[in-house]
Length: 263
Image (spheres, rainbow, N blue to C red):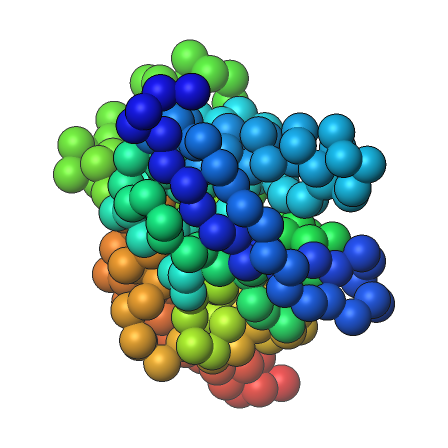
């Protein structure tokens, strides 16, 4: 190993299952190349644990390119490790110093129960999407969609929101365990496009209702979600969500009055 290799002490949350008691276990990560990603460093640690007949550390990963949103855990109290605009898989060991002590733990949120070690169940996000994060009206074929003119400013805002990869860092970092940034991004990117208009307010109502059904907390504008989002999703989208939700409530009230008057 190179003379520039670093040695780290890892305090890792180990939990064998959802209902098991967890605890921190300390491991030495020696002779780690600064050019490794954080997950590659864990791969090395796990290879050494396996060679000794010990159980490897469980963590989520897939693309390892910051695209899929699968990876994610807390490093020294910060989701994804605190390197701005990076997921754990994009975080490299050159950002750490020889002799550093690192504490690794899973997302801490009621809505994300621990599956094992650093892995959590994020299926609550899937249920929010299932509640309304889609377009079900007939929008025609792909050429039909391309024929719809969308102002560039609207397209840019939609793309900014659509960058959300659903990693869950926003929830993990929020003191309340709120899911507003994720939900706002999923609502807002459709709200900017013509295809998303017919169900716009119904979508906002349904997805916010699903937030409340799950064990997520309430948003009180700490801004921690934006700070750790690897895609830089702005909390401005939460304001857009709130606007659409309030408009939906007004529409429902108006329709109820109209229905009552016609009776």
